[in-house]
Image (cartoon, rainbow, N blue to C red; front, side, top):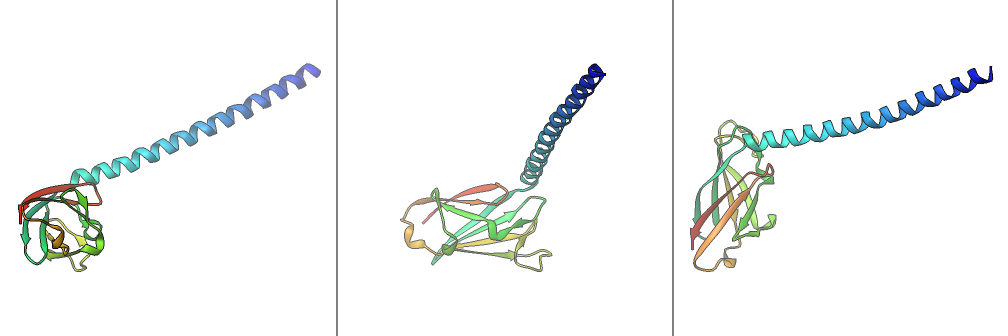
Length: 148
């Protein structure tokens, strides 16, 4: 009877350890699956997104006209501007959709629409060649060179 009891104890311990190990493995696989799903969604959004700077108008302000040539809407309020490689703060820029297709709210920049980004700090620009870059929240970007 003592031998049967010890075998039963070892069996129960073995099952408990196997359950613990399988729980840890299941958790690891679920975390891996979540990470792959998030990266896949981000990559898909980047692949389907495309922007192109159409024109830069320099006057009292620098006006950057950018088209959404992709297949997905982009949040225009999360679009960033770099001037000569330097990040431009939000309080120096304004954004608005100037060529609307079906957009009723001036937040989403739909495919085919043109976004106007106005940079108000033109005193920071010296005469000569400059490079402007538009960067979206999806990681899609375009550059354009212009003269002042």
